[in-house]
Image 1 (spheres, rainbow, N blue to C red):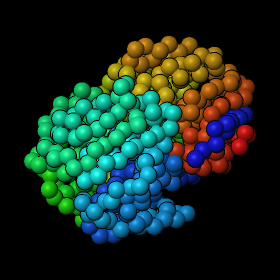
Image 2: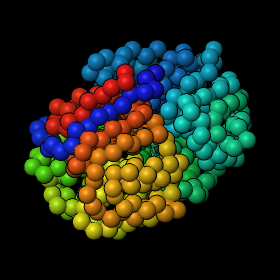
Image 3: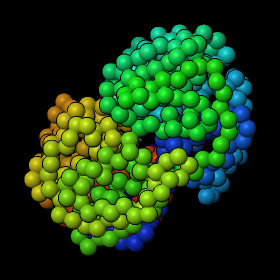
Image 4: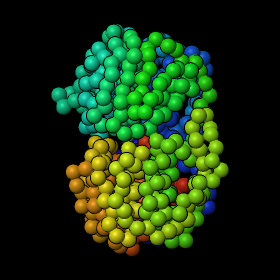
Length: 440
Ligand code: SPQ
């Protein structure tokens, strides 16, 4: 696992130039291992994200008897699927590391197995709320033990007879939706959810790719248990959430001209592009194409003068992981940016509203947190010493802020960047960010 004391040191200024390719999509990579393991036949994955989060998912399925080859250096993984009922009891706890996606999606899947499993996580994951999945899964008949606060470790008891339910989701969460749909594969009858707003739909798309019927009618998504998954090939596009750091970086750093290749353009993920365009960013989508059921494009970003905006609430779930770096964009914009309807940001790997506000204030920006968002006045970023609270997206966001800072930026606790973006430092340095590390 990651070193605990890795620091990023970012020299002020610079611009981002050239062509880069960021690593594979984290959400799709997790799901490729889960569904590939449960399919009949051999699933070949390319472009798999070799971040620690996805490797936790991969190891969990190996621990349950699935033969998985790779990942090779280029991200090729071969999964020898065991079928929906072919997993074996692991002889160890399943360690989900820092990964909320692994813990929540697996809660659903594990509820349908014939054996018990115990799932653990690191100190950040051990604080994250799990009742959002354990409560509706219990309504389906699952038996899951958590701490009194509803946090991990979770013990999922096997041999439960699951029954499909209809669930009105109280929050827009792809993880909750996915946990229920995955449990629904093992349930009697129909399992359905309604979402308060559209969230990423990779689970539905990939289930269909594996030959499973999933119905989407407006905000109502349903499937019926008792089917089977048939192996397929999966080409994982680059992660738009990782590309977002470079979209913002090239937008705020004068003289930048950067192409980010092969980025996933799933419409449930492109809120960051819409928000940056509303702020005046110069983003061009080149060579749009479809790869394995997911839209993909190259993105050309040239620097632009950004302006503060009121972020439309409808875009919030479509850009949920990009807000830390969008707050950096807002700090460099002229005028005020107001975010509302984003209380989910408080229960991510850190409280992303508070931690970003604290860091921006330490860098001389007027950033005021609210219960469900933040108000940021664009200004002049000084450098500063930042703690990322072991949150990968906070560490990378403040690294990007260095492009507009007046002195250097020292960011503590950056080891978790490896959960979603291995190679970030080298890629960013190659594109023009003055970043180095110490404390390894
Ligand atoms: O996996 P984890 O730790 O929850 O990762 C995050 C991230 O920033 O990488 C959230 F902290 O992404 C989530 C995302 O916020 C990944 C995800 C998915 O793959 O289904 C869905 C979103 O979470 P949620 O709670 O809104 O469903």
